[in-house]
Length: 168
Image (cartoon, rainbow, N blue to C red; front, side, top):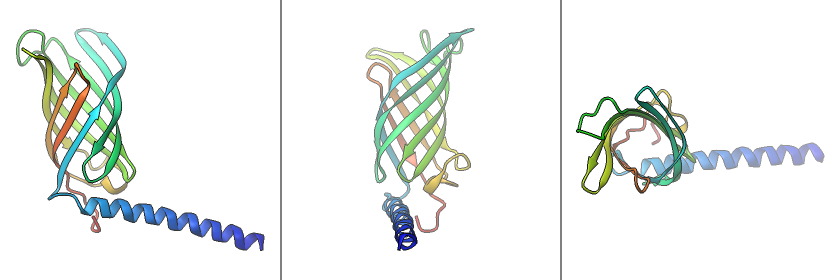
């Protein structure tokens, strides 16, 4: 009897895992023509300056349209000696990890920090790294734009996300 109960519990856990995977796949299949739309509110957890560069790690909660709640972790290297948009600016490269129920989506970014009349703004582009992504995002591809308001920590990601999963 004990073995039967353990077997039933294991089967139930397996079925729950399969249901979660199917739900994530169903969410992925409802994407609007391969669009990626996400917003986050991030805050710095580590800032390391040196040699005209700053290494910055930020994290925070957000939402990815069609996939639900997410958490981002972004590692940025900011070159303050290279200012493509004038004084006070910087050139940024980043790796953004977006953790969701269905897996992890990795984005590579190139951006620039510019001083504007309303304060500093970061704008740039991203490319999906399907090899580093996991779960339903493994093998994904896509590209788009990122925008960050450093004063508020508000990040937006907008562009394409094409999942490689045949059921997605």
